[in-house]
Image 1: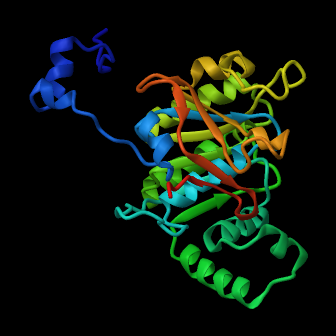
Image 2: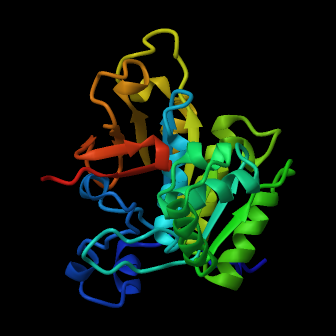
Image 3: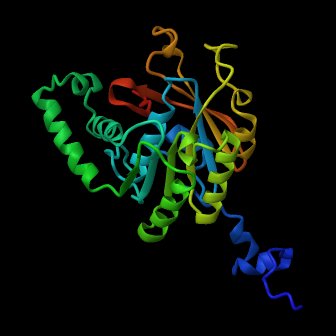
Length: 289
């Protein structure tokens, strides 16, 4: 019987020919999507299409906030805050950790730079109301798609991501919690499914994950070994979120460590000059005086 299916095996000559250009051109750096943080972009070089980046931390240190900040930044859902012009792209943010309403409130707080305490207690001053109205207008224009049902069946996240990429040209998929992939998936299986999705759709996928071994060294800088082994192995990039002031309010207040602990296409390092503004639910650049 004649074999008709195209073989996935290619010679190096075929790979070079498929680029359609001189080999040297293929070696040029192709910057990925920015994170909105200069220090993190300098280390990572952006979020490359077809890759899986894991944002991991101990509980309450801001991995979900960082994920939403990056998604909002790319969808134009926050004030630029930079001199250079930003390219706005459609983004999907899926969550197994927060409701759609919680995501909306955090988005308004971040975009408007309104105190979360003022919003939570309803004690809004006139300036808060003005800022929230401005934030609402910014977010209404942002191509940010939110998927946060009470329960996602296995495979539904993948189906929604495929549809949004094909119909709305989504260029970044953010997943808050590996559980969003499916309740029957182990962390390692979920990571592999997201990695396959990133490669299939040729978009960067960001996902949050918890760190284990919390009791072993709770106040220390996290390490790659604290992450589930299969998740760490599957990820192209791992960013560990840490804040000293979460344990000691007097230690480096409002500073954050974003540790790039694994990087297949860049280098490992701690992103410099990153601040965490808990009242605005956002990570931001530390601006030199």
